[in-house]
Image 1 (cartoon, rainbow over the protein chains, first blue to last red):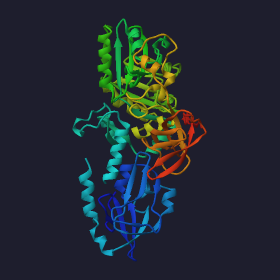
Image 2 (image 1 turned 135 degrees about the vertical axis):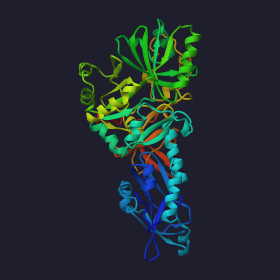
Image 3 (image 1 turned 30 degrees about the vertical axis):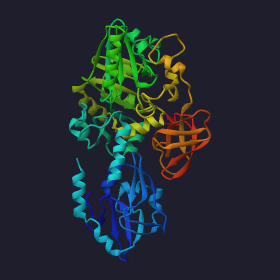
Image 4 (image 1 turned 180 degrees about the horizontal axis):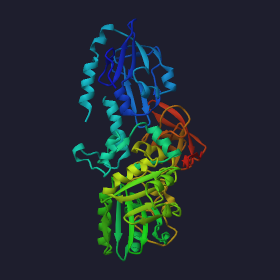
Length: 129
Length: 383
């Protein structure tokens, strides 16, 4: 699956969409879900929680393994996707539409520190055996 | 990625018996190219390059419960022991009693213990004739097992020949449609499958057909010459068998309440505290390795089943908090059949099925119910 060019990425395999109002929508990448396999449990951060960049803030669990999800930038959680919590397999079906939570960044400029699609593509390739 | 990679590495080591080796040194089964041709996701499983899943692990799991699944289990080692004293040797070597095997082809599940009563391995023993027994041992323990058996063979002056059968491949065919698929894939085998009882085996030319498995379903484990394995696998797929990876193999055996060596028991645990007392025969006066230690030991723990009542997933090594003390999950996962998380756990004695205890998951205490396993047998939920 191609890596969407309009999203930003982290080295820990989260994707980030910058919305028109400056808020950020966060999920995990297709590559991450492919490694984890069938998703069965999602734990999202509560709305209102304030996060530091890189903070463990959510958990995705597949049949095989549990994995932490990290805050891509510092900010406040403004929404969590209850739909993906009740249907974790949505992440396997389409990782880039099954968002997990939304953040209001503490500093809009922090988004510039995230990877673009080309840089993320390179990372994925470098991690392949 | 560190955490995801750490988790996947955890998965691989949790399913394997030995430390992972470098990719260059990975061993391959005769079906390696077949798995790659089916786009399997391959992992390092105790030093073997094995398929963990071919697509959705959950769909693979359901395919075995409702139809027929195919597993490459060629990493496990068949081992032929031949000689006049083979029965006397096995009587002393393993904790179950091979004198239960009196009809050719009959199989016995047993632990092989060390002097301290710890489990060196769990294995299946097939009685063929008084000078030939065939054993099947775990992949990760095969070398250790073989060295131990050769030492006992020498120490007890048994004069036996132990032959590892790496020239054989082993395919498990499991599920309610297993007989139908095997009959279609292997013309002539129906004369055997029609009469073969569970936990019995029969030889057909070079082939060895056993009605055994690790899923809680009806099915077979068939040994064939390595060179014939890819063709046989293809014929089984054409007969409706679906390829199943090690991921689903683990959830199937967990639902079936079957122990996994290296997780539910190992050299430091007693079979009597691992849910395996039924496999240790102390009714007769027979002297076997580990018996003296077991007789002296005090049993304080039990292996039980757990069902998670809250949302989440039980995993091995999570703490189980009970009124009698702390226990530990030995195997935990998500049960695709029950659509809940289930586990096997070693907990203090005195906690009965039906009682609620707590499991520590990350920073939370979640409620679980203690149950008597198996969780699932022949496609039916048992609890």
